[in-house]
Every structure is written in C-alpha cells, then in structure tokens.
Length: 142
Image 1 (tube, one colour):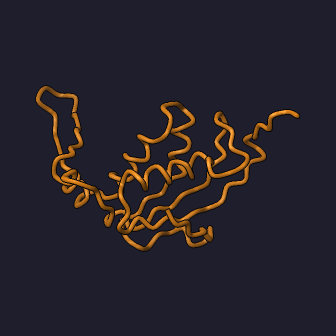
Image 2 (image 1 turned 180 degrees about the horizontal axis):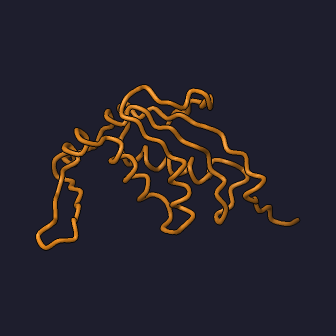
C-alpha cells in the first residue's frame, strides 16, 4: 500500500466561517491555523497547501486570559534610532482588532514560504459583516 500524497491541482478548498466572539485567542488561533493547513482533512499532506479559506468574524470580541490584555506588548520598529513603539493588546484591539488574530495565527503556522501562501487564505473582520457571502462559507464551531 502506497502513502497518499495530495497534489496542488487536486485539492478542494472550501470556505469556512469562524465566530471569534468570547473565544480565547490562543485556542482560536490553533483551530484556525489547523483549518488553514488542512489538518482536519484526510488528504492532509505537510508539504502541500490542502487547507480551506477561513473567514473570522467578531475579532474585536476575543478574550485573553490573565492580565495579558495589559501586559502583553506588540513591538513595532521604524528602522530609525529610537524608533521602537510598544502597544498593548488592549490598544491594538481598539486600533486594529484584525491584527491581533492574524498575528496569533501566523505564529501557529510553520515558518516557510508555504505558510505565507496559507496566510493569504485568512480573512479577519472586526464585526459581524463580511463581503464573502457569495462563497457560501460553512460555519465551524471552535
């Protein structure tokens, strides 16, 4: 019996919608990363992108445990001397709630070129509305 290896041309990608309301950030990121990689499918192959398109809604309503809302910091660097800027998760959720979820999911994916292709299949929205109704995404509970 030979091992099945999926091919890029034969993979079938579905659209999946995930509601992030009252979900813990890390646990949500693991589930979304597995959907993007295709780990939930029987045809999963590590070196082929077999994952689904994932739409995450209500990104502004995610939850972090403990004191991470104030203690966890994101660092941005402009490239100039003294150009470091630190923002807490609470500040980032006010400014760009989609960044917090995308950053967490990116950290859960492998560090290679395939992961950057997978990340393009992730769409994150702060509210309930999203422009992907035409793709008829299936709701997935995480």
